[in-house]
Image (cartoon, rainbow, N blue to C red; front, side, top):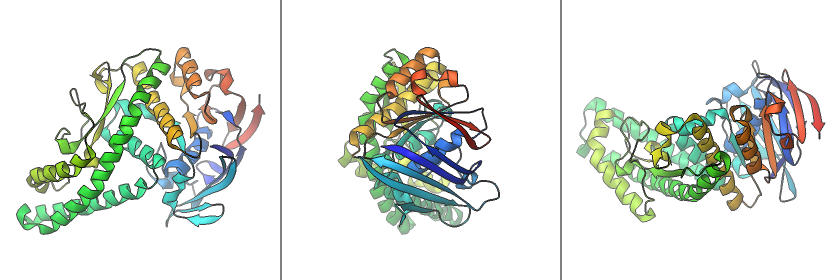
Length: 389
């Protein structure tokens, strides 16, 4: 898969932008704050329906405007299609494929990309929520049907939490709250499917993460990852990251729902005290280790960068293996400035055979020359020069 042409209207600092992209590497160069990251952020939105920089869609719309439009002409398996999304400041967003309206949540099935940015260091050093988002975005890219399951789970979780808060306020005991059982059934049904899907994904990622880490770092530090499940009682009530000894074996899919239900029953009194749901996929974590030690507490800065890169490269490998639409588009946003020369070359080697790679950089010399085959220069929210080597 590749992007043939990107068109923006009132997206971030662009009133309008038109840029053609080539097969292989494409380098966007410009001083910080000029708009190069905004270009790749728009494509990331098509793939994930979100930004890697902000949580609110409103921030993506140019100041003073009511909406922004991202339009991309794509090529997949020698077929072209036009993907469009209109991001509205008020009212629902809208999406089209080949000028025909579709549900916005269906967009990711038409475009697949893997983006790595400096913010992704938080996958190793940050809070569980970022790791959950990483896994769930990859789940949807791998199987778009799961978008609806995740959305339904969030809705059930909100409604169950509302009931728990109401019960706490009115001091209703758990055995007199029969409506809670109904929400438990829905929570278990949806949550069990999410847990099983995440576990399968992590199993597929495991050997790829180890191989990608070795390729980028040049050393085999036994990079490993595993899911840590709250239904097993190993995640703290405050949703803090897990520590040493947290690694877990994969769980049998048939065992998930009974264990989920059993754990809910065990923590019900505590949930009524707190007014919040304490177990489920919204409380799970991804445990990352190097040489048997938690990466979060023991990895150096360089090792953390290598692990974060390995997670994204492994994700691309999984999508490449599963997809019938070709390679995902690889996006490296301001990454090379953070790496030493050796890691820069190793990263370039790791992405060299992908169908399309998009790179942003403030300093052109930071990027290996072989990745500058097609260079686009940006200043003040405008394309000022395109150079094909």
